[in-house]
Image (cartoon, rainbow over all chains, first blue to last red; front, side):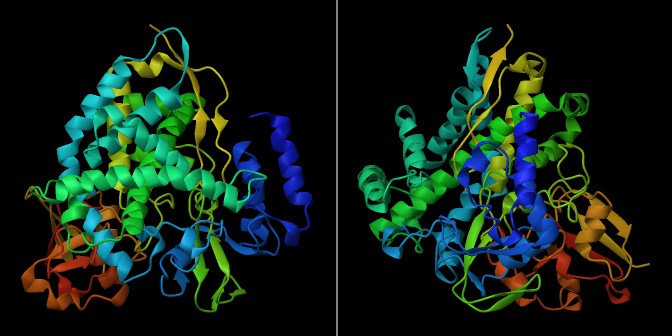
Length: 417
Length: 106
């Protein structure tokens, strides 16, 4: 990262009048200049009201403990009332799924999905994931620059999703495609109508495809794949098509670009911190801790949004019922009052699992152990092959234009023969 | 000082001293006992300190709190003797407590 760009961002963050500070601007996430803005808020106005932004007015919650307080208080802070991203969408435009539901409906649906990514089933998935990882790593091009995001991160997570859904393997690219469409917001200058007109037919195709798989499996014996489980569980087998699509999208998106971006981020961080890579190479027992640190440091989802359904006092401020409240996980994960030296990538830190990337409370990421397992297996196989000393990141990463998905579109890499 | 025995799913037992006032979760995490994570740091926010309390001790540990109940309702392998370790503080009455860890935290 260019030192001048960073310096300019720092100056701008501190020069702005505090009450005008708007951390939601997506371009800063893309050029990686968000950090001084969140640092200033944590120090000077940890629960900060922004009156005007492209997303309307909203509260920013930037410190670890305050984020935890909001995340665990689903009685006061609803996921259903306004959805879970800073971008407001009318209820009729939103695809209903359990991440944007409150109890009791949320609970029934989560309980249906949870077993497939519980520790017992993860053990069943491990060898399949490992064989897929081995194939991918063993077919990487040598002595030529390629995009790690495409060839490894996207490829691996897509294969994983296809496995979870028992989706036709040769058509798995559809999963990435639908996930990317589902998580692409309106582009600058694009109206909501234009955006819907582009998006809706594609997601309708997604629904049609999965409905076909559903219809095939509902009449067969229940199996341990997500579609079969949804089709057979009493809580979900009578789901309306829009809800079915919503939950599918949740599982595809939730399991897709998040893990993808941790896979890319991990390589980037290790390449920027070779002393940490060496620690891992010298002590395999540090793997679980390294995985957690990668996930913390990347924070694949920069925020989660809630809508206050009660007046609530937080950090000395009065949040009113109806207010939009944004938990900036990406900020809380750099809060030095909760995490020691948080801006350092340290794979053997104390309490590595104490981070906000998966959230907390009843909505805490249901796939968190699956994400960790994928990362662990990738790094185990990288180290086993000695690829860690052969992989070279040969250029700056390109980041995604989004204040929600915090990730990479490109990471140029070269692997020595 | 009261003692707790933590039993891994393999059957391996770890008996340690845990001071009065310290939670079962903190006792495990601070002593490197595998099988309890405590990701949220003890705030009843993640359910990764899920334990099964030995039947003989269950009532002595008290009742589940409302927020504990909410999180436990999603836990894998939920049993009637399931508790969150961060919600049970050691007392002299609990000296000799035995808890089992689940297959894995989630």
